[in-house]
Amino acid sequence: MSPEYDIASPAAAELFESLRAFGYDLPTALADIIDNSITAAARNIWIDMIWDGAASRVTIRDDGIGMTEDSLRQAMRPGSLSPLEDRAANDLGRFGLGMKTASISQCRCLTVMSKPSGGVTAIRRWDLDYIASTGTGEWRLLKGETLLSEEDRALLDAQEQGTVLFWDRLDQLVGETGPDDEIAQKHFRERADAVKAHLAMVFHRFLRGRNAIRLHLNGRLVEPWDPFLEDTDKVDPMPAETLVADGEAVEVKAFILPHHSRISPEQHAAAAGPRGWNAHQGFYIYRNKRLLVAGDWLGLGMQKEEHFKLARVRIDLSNSADLLWQIDVKKSRARPPAALRRDLLRIARTARGQASSIYRHRGKVIQRKLGSNDVFLWNPVVKRGKTFYKINREHPLVRKVLETSEDRAPVRALLALVEQTVPAPLIVINNAETPDGFGQPFEDSPADLKAAMAETFQALVEDGRDRPGAARALLAMEPFNQFPELVAVFLEETATGKAQESS
View 1: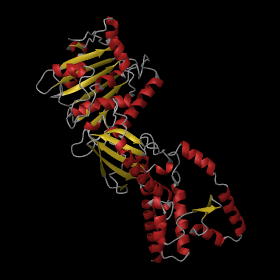
View 2: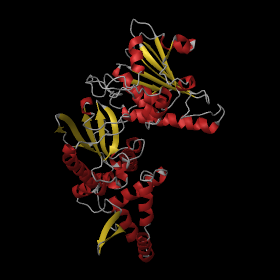
View 3: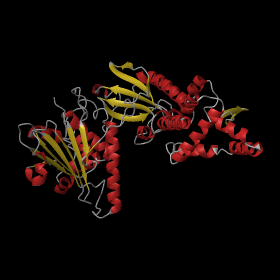
């Protein structure tokens, strides 16, 4: 005997409004749309954010395989595929909600136009205001070419295949503002910059290599942001490990990034990422090469601290591990299974230990190799369990000043005064609040750098070193070791000048 039942279909208008509250922001919403384009084998993806006040629009176009009338209708259904179904290995989707929920989180009118190779163009639209106005609660999916202007329909004319999404009535981004509202327009542009940074990070492994996807934002190519600096030879990667839980294998590999003194200022600034060095330490979780989590210690009981900021750990998952890792609809959160927490904690502690060692003792290897005590201008001194910082009297320039001064007492008093008034508490506070806000040595004073370099080199020579030995010492000495190209030019100029004097 069949049970009794009622048909309890959800009201379309009310459910759509609820689906808008999934927690997307503009960058994560657009990333979800790009997932679909990549799954559809697109080689090019174009995003255009067009400012026009309340009539502003976002379009996302790709040259993927496109959809027929039937497949587009199916794709427009909320929950078009079960998250429990097996997916193709390269499928970046999971819940069958992404295109719809990501889009309507930002706009009240979503129109999709798609053309398969050799097929006809299909158009469908979800219009939240129209659905609410009917008062029927019906899921009325609008269709027909009259939904779009002739100019809009022409966007796919030059392509054999592809799909375009139109986001109109961007109430979350611009509301009812006018096109001349400069503050709103500035906010719109700033959100475009945030989109660029987010997409460069999330899809960086798709945007490089021989089969790279080309992603365009407002007509400009988006360059990838690699959190692991694998294009440089300064990164210290740890061996990759394969961990298994419930039959699902994941690959884990830790990277220890170089201290800023070993890379250029431009590389250091770029490696900081959209949220800065401190925020980007931790685990990076990828699903089919698509970044889900960008820098997080995954609730393993570890805090983000300045001296661990060089540690970044990559985890690669397949799309069959979604449920095990509790991937959310927005694909922006993941939680490791309990069976892997101990191993992940071990790897994290090792990576953090190495990162801390580089951060705290970055110059000691050089110093040991030189067998010299004149590399650093400042030396830490521990007394009664407290750390003090003293100016190194063995530094060649300091020693020269002391030895050549007719009256050394004022110089020694000045050095002691500088040592005793180092604003350590203020430095700690500023570093905690803006860890990436400190300027680099001689950042705005190249002339002072050259003068300090010349005086230090001369002091080394007067101290009894031959010129090659003085040059080697200068290249290893802080802060000149951060400017190897400038030191090389200085040494060449010095050698040329010496040769002219001899002749």
